[in-house]
Length: 161
Image (cartoon, rainbow, N blue to C red; front, side, top):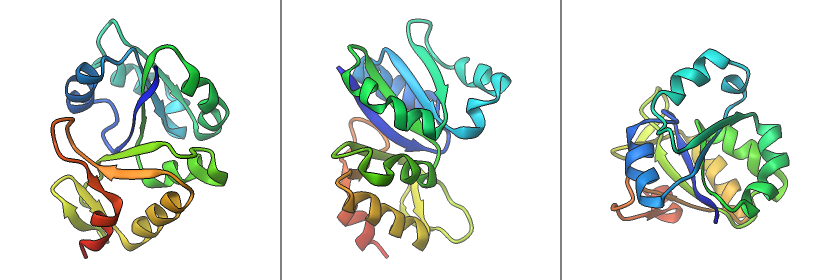
């Protein structure tokens, strides 16, 4: 079944992902793409505390993700791919590596320089420009916090401010 959700969420593995999305999408594996977590076994262990025993969790860096994307797309399991931020997403997407993948913006929270777009989505001008470039490369970007919520297309997100 391959990648059933590709999500940007600062919290990575948490209840909304595991219960809200994971149960709804019947995930078999969570893949976290984060260069720092990829080399921190103790942090990986902490994140895995929230993963059901029936679900595998693996951690990789951006280069590993770019290398393994074709394999993930053909995997017989149902995969959820999580990244922490838009910088990581942009690095994965560089050179068209994501093709026409769909990416869900699920949790980018307030920080200095960011403006509220949705209750769970705050973007800086630089992040807006990064999203435009990612979309120009063919990636379909929308925001949705939970599966039952309406997806908000990128065009609508960028018009808000």
